[in-house]
Length: 99
Image (cartoon, one colour):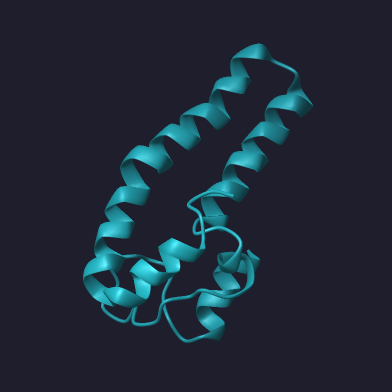
């Protein structure tokens, strides 16, 4: 939720294909990881798996990671690279994809 609030604070959108998504957010949690929302979802799904204690539920965080890492993030990063150019390349040079 904090990461989403950062987008609205700087006046841009969370949705990667939004026409009004015009600012590269690099502060707050985005200074620590390029994907704080996906990371939060993975940690949350791991917490749910631990809470319920069902072995099969441990697949959820792995599945979230796999889909985010190999489907959503490449699409979003390609779009940001086209839109923000050198600024995005500098950001990816400073901040890792995960941690």
